[in-house]
Length: 223
Image (cartoon, rainbow, N blue to C red):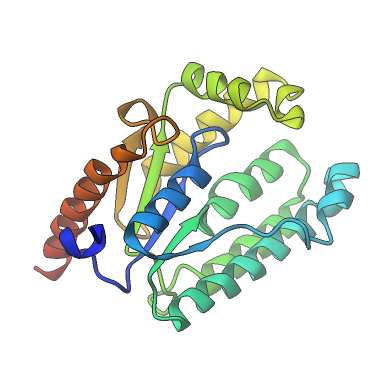
């Protein structure tokens, strides 16, 4: 059964998945794309020319890295809408400025001039009526303990050796960011309310909820 048609989700919809490490963005992206017969859009890290340099020297390369991410995400967003939509997107362009660039500035690994240049460029490119914002941003949230448990379960070496203080900070920054986010409608989903890893049947109730929320927000916008 085509769940997109069953729940009247537009075939040109663009849905973005956001949330900190460990909440299951990639799993949600793939599950929704399969169920709705949409394409996926994932972050490309293998071709990033600044990533290794950045980890060697945060102060020197944080600005370059963020500008690269901004350009790549902008091009990806443009491509999605040129295709005519029908995409599930893993991670949003908004997190770069609202969380990561801001964090570098506040920690002193990006100087004030670079931060102002970056945010000015971001606002000119993205925070305008002409930028194709998603129809919906799904924010995956959970308690810090639940997220740490998931990080331990999936056992990625780099994550295993990351201090807990870092995950605490990221959790706090994401919560602060989403509370202020207003670029597009937001549906908040708690990771304890479903388990797509254990039971793929959980996807239909989620799609029903997504469809109802999209219809509700569409009606509000059109009033």
